[in-house]
Image 1 (cartoon, rainbow, N blue to C red):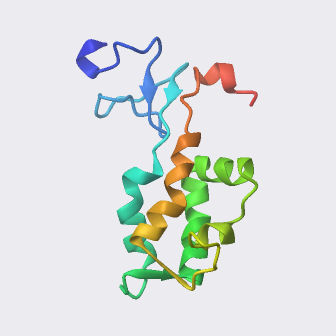
Image 2 (cartoon, rainbow, N blue to C red; image 1 turned 60 degrees about the horizontal axis):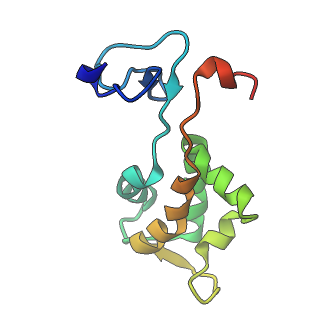
Length: 131
Protein backbone atom coordinates (compact mmCIF):
# COMPACT_ATOMS: atom_id res chain seq x y z
CA UNK A 1 0.00 0.00 0.00
CA UNK A 2 2.92 2.36 0.64
CA UNK A 3 4.06 1.97 -2.97
CA UNK A 4 0.80 3.45 -4.26
CA UNK A 5 0.51 6.15 -1.56
CA UNK A 6 -2.44 4.51 0.20
CA UNK A 7 -0.77 3.47 3.46
CA UNK A 8 -3.02 5.75 5.52
CA UNK A 9 -6.23 4.25 4.15
CA UNK A 10 -7.93 1.14 5.50
CA UNK A 11 -9.54 0.55 2.11
CA UNK A 12 -8.59 1.25 -1.49
CA UNK A 13 -9.15 4.77 -2.76
CA UNK A 14 -10.41 5.09 -6.31
CA UNK A 15 -11.71 7.79 -8.61
CA UNK A 16 -15.31 8.00 -9.82
CA UNK A 17 -14.55 5.42 -12.56
CA UNK A 18 -13.17 2.96 -9.95
CA UNK A 19 -9.57 3.35 -11.12
CA UNK A 20 -7.33 2.62 -8.14
CA UNK A 21 -5.49 5.75 -7.07
CA UNK A 22 -1.77 5.36 -7.78
CA UNK A 23 -2.15 2.34 -10.10
CA UNK A 24 -2.59 3.06 -13.78
CA UNK A 25 -4.76 0.49 -15.52
CA UNK A 26 -6.01 -1.13 -12.28
CA UNK A 27 -9.70 -1.00 -11.43
CA UNK A 28 -11.32 -1.75 -8.08
CA UNK A 29 -14.01 -4.34 -7.42
CA UNK A 30 -15.82 -4.67 -4.13
CA UNK A 31 -15.44 -2.24 -1.26
CA UNK A 32 -13.48 0.90 -1.96
CA UNK A 33 -13.86 4.60 -1.35
CA UNK A 34 -14.31 7.06 -4.18
CA UNK A 35 -12.23 10.22 -4.08
CA UNK A 36 -14.42 13.00 -5.46
CA UNK A 37 -12.68 15.53 -7.70
CA UNK A 38 -12.54 19.09 -6.45
CA UNK A 39 -13.90 21.72 -8.77
CA UNK A 40 -11.04 24.12 -8.05
CA UNK A 41 -8.62 21.57 -9.57
CA UNK A 42 -10.38 21.97 -12.93
CA UNK A 43 -11.70 25.54 -12.70
CA UNK A 44 -9.53 27.06 -15.45
CA UNK A 45 -10.38 24.32 -17.95
CA UNK A 46 -14.08 24.61 -17.12
CA UNK A 47 -13.99 28.38 -17.59
CA UNK A 48 -12.20 28.15 -20.94
CA UNK A 49 -14.66 25.55 -22.24
CA UNK A 50 -17.64 27.66 -21.12
CA UNK A 51 -16.31 30.91 -22.63
CA UNK A 52 -17.63 30.19 -26.12
CA UNK A 53 -16.55 33.51 -27.69
CA UNK A 54 -13.16 33.70 -25.89
CA UNK A 55 -14.04 37.07 -24.38
CA UNK A 56 -12.48 36.30 -21.01
CA UNK A 57 -15.88 36.54 -19.33
CA UNK A 58 -18.97 34.37 -19.09
CA UNK A 59 -22.39 35.77 -19.88
CA UNK A 60 -25.33 34.78 -17.71
CA UNK A 61 -26.37 32.27 -20.39
CA UNK A 62 -22.86 30.75 -20.62
CA UNK A 63 -22.72 30.58 -16.82
CA UNK A 64 -26.05 28.75 -16.57
CA UNK A 65 -25.07 26.32 -19.33
CA UNK A 66 -21.79 25.39 -17.66
CA UNK A 67 -23.40 25.16 -14.22
CA UNK A 68 -25.72 22.41 -15.45
CA UNK A 69 -22.65 20.40 -16.47
CA UNK A 70 -20.78 21.27 -13.26
CA UNK A 71 -23.62 20.06 -11.05
CA UNK A 72 -23.57 16.69 -12.83
CA UNK A 73 -19.78 16.30 -12.63
CA UNK A 74 -19.19 17.82 -9.19
CA UNK A 75 -22.02 16.81 -6.82
CA UNK A 76 -20.58 18.95 -4.04
CA UNK A 77 -21.78 22.08 -5.87
CA UNK A 78 -25.41 21.01 -5.60
CA UNK A 79 -24.88 20.03 -1.94
CA UNK A 80 -23.40 23.46 -1.25
CA UNK A 81 -26.28 25.27 -2.96
CA UNK A 82 -28.88 23.25 -1.04
CA UNK A 83 -27.08 23.58 2.30
CA UNK A 84 -26.74 27.35 1.94
CA UNK A 85 -30.26 27.71 0.46
CA UNK A 86 -28.86 29.32 -2.67
CA UNK A 87 -29.71 29.08 -6.34
CA UNK A 88 -27.50 29.56 -9.39
CA UNK A 89 -28.37 33.24 -9.77
CA UNK A 90 -27.07 33.94 -6.26
CA UNK A 91 -23.60 32.89 -7.42
CA UNK A 92 -23.68 35.67 -10.02
CA UNK A 93 -24.02 38.45 -7.43
CA UNK A 94 -21.04 40.64 -6.60
CA UNK A 95 -19.89 41.48 -3.06
CA UNK A 96 -22.47 44.29 -2.82
CA UNK A 97 -25.29 41.92 -3.80
CA UNK A 98 -25.76 43.35 -7.30
CA UNK A 99 -26.45 40.97 -10.17
CA UNK A 100 -23.62 40.80 -12.70
CA UNK A 101 -24.22 40.58 -16.44
CA UNK A 102 -20.84 38.88 -16.95
CA UNK A 103 -18.39 37.07 -14.72
CA UNK A 104 -14.61 36.83 -15.17
CA UNK A 105 -12.36 33.98 -14.07
CA UNK A 106 -11.79 35.47 -10.61
CA UNK A 107 -15.52 35.91 -10.05
CA UNK A 108 -16.09 32.37 -11.30
CA UNK A 109 -13.50 31.02 -8.85
CA UNK A 110 -15.04 33.02 -6.01
CA UNK A 111 -18.54 31.81 -6.86
CA UNK A 112 -17.51 28.15 -6.71
CA UNK A 113 -14.68 28.16 -4.15
CA UNK A 114 -16.86 27.29 -1.16
CA UNK A 115 -18.42 24.26 -2.87
CA UNK A 116 -15.29 22.13 -2.41
CA UNK A 117 -15.74 22.42 1.36
CA UNK A 118 -18.70 20.04 0.91
CA UNK A 119 -16.45 17.23 -0.38
CA UNK A 120 -16.37 14.33 2.03
CA UNK A 121 -14.49 11.08 1.68
CA UNK A 122 -17.14 8.43 1.90
CA UNK A 123 -16.56 5.08 3.58
CA UNK A 124 -16.47 1.87 1.58
CA UNK A 125 -19.09 1.71 -1.17
CA UNK A 126 -21.08 -1.13 0.40
CA UNK A 127 -21.55 0.94 3.55
CA UNK A 128 -23.12 3.84 1.64
CA UNK A 129 -24.91 1.84 -1.05
CA UNK A 130 -28.33 2.51 0.46
CA UNK A 131 -27.72 6.25 0.55
